[in-house]
Image (cartoon, rainbow, N blue to C red; front, side, top):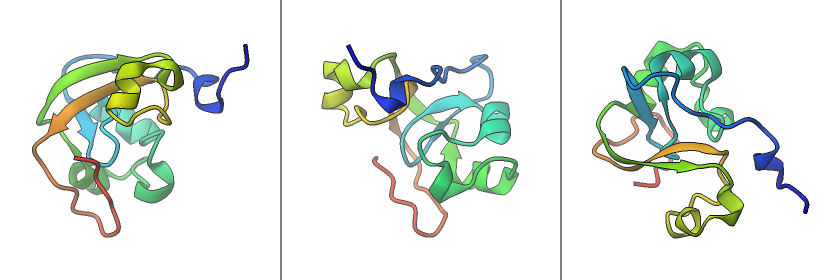
Length: 109
């Protein structure tokens, strides 16, 4: 059985449930520190969150509802239903109540 490229990487899960935030573009949930250190593994090419506090504050939110943990997004029916099948394995918000403020960002919510 061959593995998809996105599933050959380690899963991205929050290291704590304090200070968790969701990416407004893809819904990936991580801690503020994880966004600062690594950016968003799905959206980093467009959002450039790594090491930029202002971009993190503008493109992530602590206000989200629900959490989906996906280990094999390409094989998951819930990932297909939520349109997450091409995302990296990790935890995702079901919904957010904010809009991205960066230019050119296309949120999925």
